[in-house]
Image 1 (tube, rainbow, N blue to C red):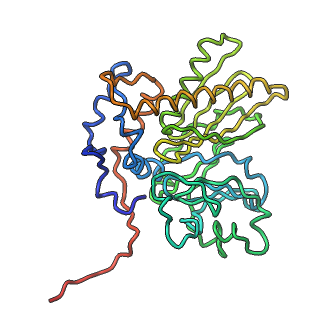
Image 2: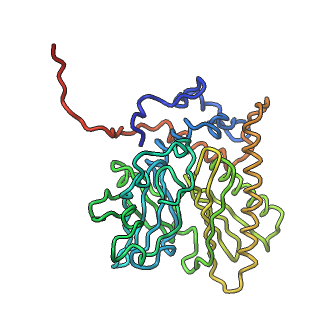
Image 3: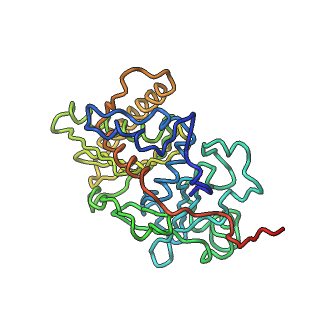
Length: 347
């Protein structure tokens, strides 16, 4: 959460908390307009999403099979907060805030204050692009740099986060007030129970995460329209950050993680229950490449002078926008990062 969200979210004279700003986005598809262009290019709007979505909602951070062994640790930056999920000795999972929220730096470097998650050789933090899974063997035994940065000397004293496993997916909620009450997404049956994660990869895309999500769904559905019954493909965007694309023989789960207002990391997981489905898996990955190019092109259009037609052309984006606007309008408790104290003015 932000230190002072009560100060508002305004950029270039546009107040992103004004309800009337989104009134035209609320009408039926085909008539509704797209979100304001600043929603895809403004650092302030990115901060608004951090406050209203990432630090309030259930967020998918990956799959349980990525951390199979005791002590294995999955880092993930949720909004501006550095967290991790770790495999326990009994087989369960636990989520915590990292010991070093700013990578252990004495002060946040200037290049990390730009609103982009910069690559950092030290650790994953609220200002850096996450590193991959850390094996439990690296974190056990004598204190290692990774253990000190993520777990510290007493992991049991780290601030815990709410965590749920829904099918193969790991979801976290870092809001202490909403973690137990916020509605969970309906994704448990999205991947067949006997499907196995056969591949995983990361793909960086030069586009806002919302454009990438819409491009993934639209590209998959356009492929389905032209592929015939034998190449049936479906796609669904589970708010806020999980896109699932399925064919008859394989499924592709994509976790969207913003790494800047015009950058997104796609965390890809391929599932199948057939041993000879490599061609089907490759076909789904090809859809990602096409969608990435489409999203990058859409991002380039955003920075060009606006055209007269602002109608939202993507049905998936329109549906997503309704959820996002609901979240923007929601009221939440404000958490202050300064100690409370009594003060009395004297003469």
